[in-house]
Length: 278
Image 1 (cartoon, rainbow, N blue to C red):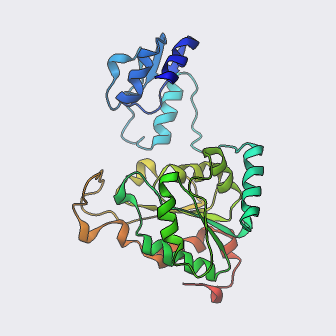
Image 2: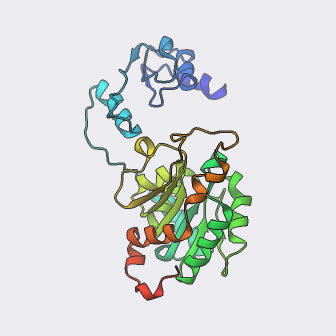
């Protein structure tokens, strides 16, 4: 409420919402901003002054939908490339943080295991096995995420043959962006950090579960995607999985992740195949 009131006092001329959701559109009316622009794909059209037309079926990806909003406002572009620059101070901070933990960025792999929905997670045991294989390649491993991911990160690192670093809850969003930018690569489930990795220009692999890769997958040839949709795909499960014996994330093997990493990460392409931990 405090933030909402401060925005209302600024008396903006226009507000643009890129999510198109009732819960993000409603506050726009409360703020008293004269021109309110959004897609309204999930309700809230009554609170808008300008509603962006629904996208064509061929423009399913969230990037295309966002470009449609920009085009509606007169800023048409066909450039789907994501690029967010990390502030210099954030990069300096992350370099210092890595040094404090004896991490060489050029040989550090970031793991992002956390996600809001349980069924988008990869089993902790598989993440742990992956850590062991990466460490045998003389690579350092750092687990990232929010404060809610600290215990998950601890569980993953507990079984490593060498110490790993738990950075969950220790990086702001811009610092996380910087970490992706300076590290050798990453492995992540479908999540917000995975999208930051795309925007940072990182190399890595995204483990896609029940979500729609065609709408939310990374648009980067630096990033590989592994997905095994079940018969219920696309799935938006928030409760119990309706195919627990055929859980999509559990079908992704450690060996597949290693193979995909060797295809994407420059540092692994330089290693001799005989040194492979797989």
